[in-house]
Length: 152
Image 1 (cartoon, rainbow, N blue to C red):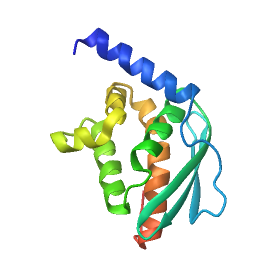
Image 2 (image 1 turned 90 degrees about the horizontal axis):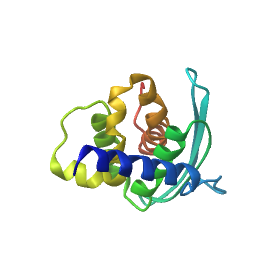
Image 3 (image 1 turned 120 degrees about the vertical axis):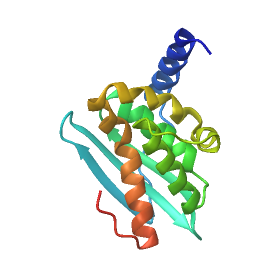
Image 4 (image 1 turned 180 degrees about the vertical axis):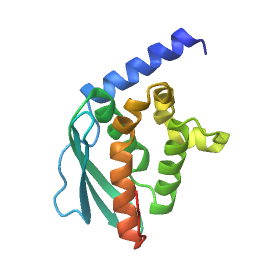
């Protein structure tokens, strides 16, 4: 796929997820929620999950922030909803590696779906935090569920 076509696809997907976010809103009777802030630009994301029998049955989020943070969290929510927590952790790890331009294998690339389009943000280090905020929040919730101590 050519560079111009890739840029057009990136803009289209990001714009769509920002204007029509998936899984947006709060979640009653959630098993966990966490709010994270990006002090450099003011983004605030709160993620709610309902994990039952080691599966992310539902995920929702609220966001006050930039287009990138909204779109990235929307994409993330689609990619991990319905997955078991171990698979969700793999997706989050693959996304984190991809966004900072670490090499990931073909299986990880397929697993990321539209989230792969955000890898070009590595060219703009100040935007990486915007793109990863919702992912970090969800990782924390999964770690809390699994009893893992996280020092992010």
